[in-house]
Length: 636
Image 1: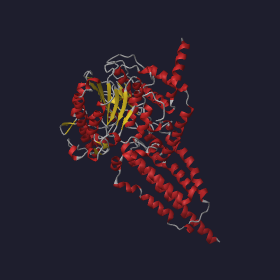
Image 2: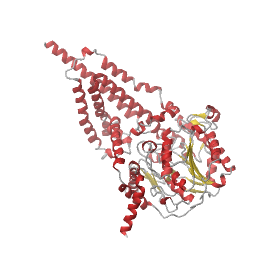
Image 3: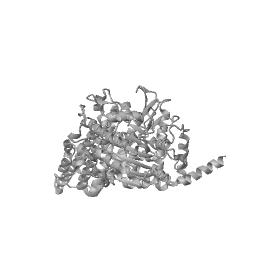
Image 4: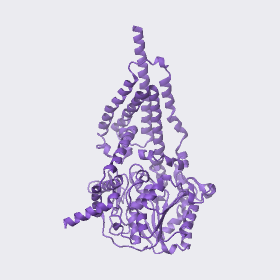
């Protein structure tokens, strides 16, 4: 009897030792990935210990649930699923320098169109991120079932681990808040959340946030729109009438250039201009050299949303997916009411990024997608239809459009991973430590040549006299993962201030009656719509008073731009993650008095825009306008 008890205790020790070993193995894996794969800055010993400790609570929870449901098999399944989630984040982080969110997971349909990009971010070394799965399987199933004698039912073991996870997380959170107070309110900074509470806990919190956002629409009412309207009215500046109506009744062509950043403009590589035609073209129109992209996870679709709505995209996911069924008062709908034919042109699959659904909500009359172009293997590379053919075909379609028209063209070729057939490489690759950056120069040159062909043909067409062309970059092409290489090219260290400045993208207004000038005003994509409306001589406020941008041609506007993380720039300062920089010198200055108001305004504006989208508040626009008018009447 005594021998049997001893054997049972020995087997229990073996079992618990096995469990402990599997937990330790996954814990080590998470620490290595969080510490050395993700760019999570550790500034002191306390932060280093928090980063090492934070995976534990989530590991205990998922492994406990696995044991609770299916014993050792459940534990192994939890290990495999946890490893898969880690790897998805590794891949996502390599391309976007960000962590995946629940709305982005729901967009897996996009993967079908990302073949080239996915292949580029895969690495042979990634196999080592799964070797531990085999070790865990060996540890769990080396002992035969009859040797795995249980001293308590597996359900109790699993429940015990899951329950212990709760106080572990509370300890983790309290510890983390010694470094960052109100940590869970910093939803805009996913790097910070992962650094302090761990990747798996971040995903659990992200699911909670998604639930909260779903509830916002359910319980929203018209009263929530009134403070937004009041805020926007307070921000409005008296119109200077500069160039107002200069394009009245004219066609509008919006050209969205993929992954195009301002640092390539007027710059050279190997003694050659990177964008020789655009450099010339910008001297013939209105060029804005302090114009920033403002996108987040939605990338190009975010830039489209900013353009057509003068509202910000979301911090999590893409509006094109998460809120495509909302009520909008978008530019194409307003222009349609003013006699315009409105269209989108993008030679990709119609359903990519849910464009077909979102374009209906925005009020576009027509969507010319891949099926409407002569896309052949010979005319395609990388992400699809080469720009030179896309431009040519699109111009031919516009020649047959009912006028006046408003159309948006979205290019494809200058897209990560920035590869070109050898015969199209007219610029020698760069010589930095980043292959991505080296190739980027070549695709930028190709895009510039395709642009030249398009504009020169456009100028010879009958459209030229009655059309205004707006050209802008949709988002960055070179992420901060390539800071070192970018510093090599620019000849200076790229820190936080310089990285923010690299988010500038070109914006040019071009046409027959458009004067030649350069504007230093600080603005962004949210300002595109009011600028267009000014050129067309339309009073947009009569149709939709909700817009967070302002006319870039208005000399009385406040220079101001905010990115989706709550950073901002104005005429004098740049505010980044709570640090204030002098815009002219890039030197740090005191936040109080210089940037404090800017940070507050940035966050308030983002919150206002979010409330409109999450609550689908524009469905109450007519009702809210009546409420506002009644309040004004009562005040009189």
